[in-house]
Amino acid sequence: MTQVIVLNGGSSSGKSGIVRCLQAVLPGPWLAFGVDTFVDALPAAMRKSDAGIAFGPDGEVAVGPEFHALEAAWIEGLAAMARAGARIVVDEVFLGGVESQERWRRALGELGVLWVGVRCDSAIATDREVARGDRVAGMAAAQADVVHRGMVYDLEVDTGHAESMACARAIAARVR
Image (cartoon, rainbow, N blue to C red; front, side):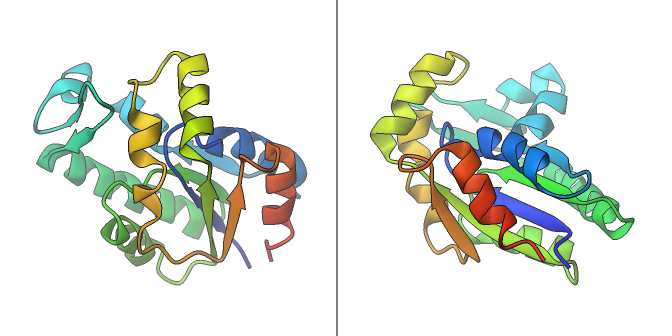
C-alpha cells in the first residue's frame, strides 16, 4: 500500500500544483509537506548562513552542516508520521543528487513509497519563476535537469506538456 508519494523536481516545475490536485483526487486525507515547508521553519539566521542554507545571486543553493542535521531529523519525522498511519505527499528538490534520494529511501525503509519525477522544460520553469516573484532568479534553470540526474522513479510527469490535474491523475492511478 502506498503511504508516501515523493515528488522530485526543480524549482517552479509545478510540484506544488500537483500536490494540491493530489489531495483533491486521492481517496482519504493526504498530508502535504515540502522542502519549502522545512526551509520556512528554519530560524531566519539559518536562511542566510554557511551552516544553514544560502541562495546565490544566480539561483545556486548551498547548504551547510546544521541544515543537513535538521533536514535528517525532519525526514525521519515525516517517516515516523507515515509509520503511525498518516499518508504523506512530499514536494522535494533533490539538490544532492542520488544521495538525496538515498537519505529518503533509508528513512522511509519498509514503507510503501511512490517515487515521482516532475519534469518541466527550463524555459517554462523560468517563466513560472518570474511570474511567482518569490524565487531567486535563475533557480529554476539551475535545477531543471540536475535534480533528476541518476534518479530512479516509478513514474515521471511533465508539467510543460500536461496540467497539474492531469499529472495528479496519472500519479493517483499508480497509488496502491
